[in-house]
Image 1 (cartoon, rainbow, N blue to C red):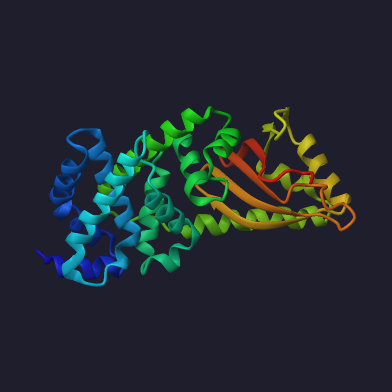
Image 2: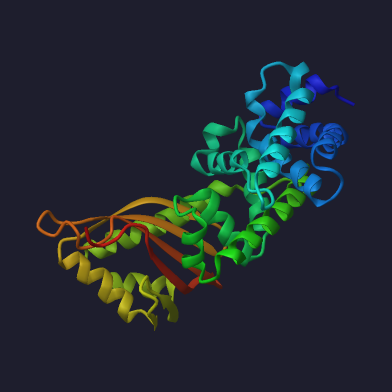
Length: 306
């Protein structure tokens, strides 16, 4: 069996199996640290799970192979202290920052593509209700509990409970699949981005209805920022083309994609004579059924007036 130094070096080089084995070896010490600080029970379990997630993305911060054990115990300690400072469980700042880093640039964060694919595969195993809150919270700028509540159409308390459940399941999926081969997560992301770019090209060419018809259900359920609901493509086509005719131009800032949930971050570029015509930042959230958009949620991140 490889020693800890070998496992550490392989983990830093992007080998998820080595990282998983390293975490298993140190789990008793991590759990003992959690027990000392928050006692036996679910709080200690949450702390160890969150520390393991942090280690997935921050192992590169450790320079000395002999210090990895002390570093893991320190991560657990910080998570536990964050718990003790809060009246509600987990949701630590460290976890927020590191999962956001995964989304920002996996190729830069990880030395190997295997680790990126491992994390994204674990996200895909979550149910759609849990996955959408994880995608919004950690992989988009639309991350506040209130914003997620509005996009998902559920109370803030439900958002918090779903995030807590998702973190627990995500940790379990990562541990269970550490030694498996995973599909290329980048392929889906690139394909979904090309689809978004194709639609914006169609807008400029006046082919919005045809472009949407290729990928949307004819009876798609659409929720608007003011709470209104419509069915079908008509109102969406009218809104997109109407804004374009008024001089608004759309810029695709980012695309976050899972198998059946796709989120576009879109910037509306207003004409000089109508600077407040549309909000600057908008989330277009698509829910797919058999590859076609069956539900669509539009969210304004900034107001449409001064």
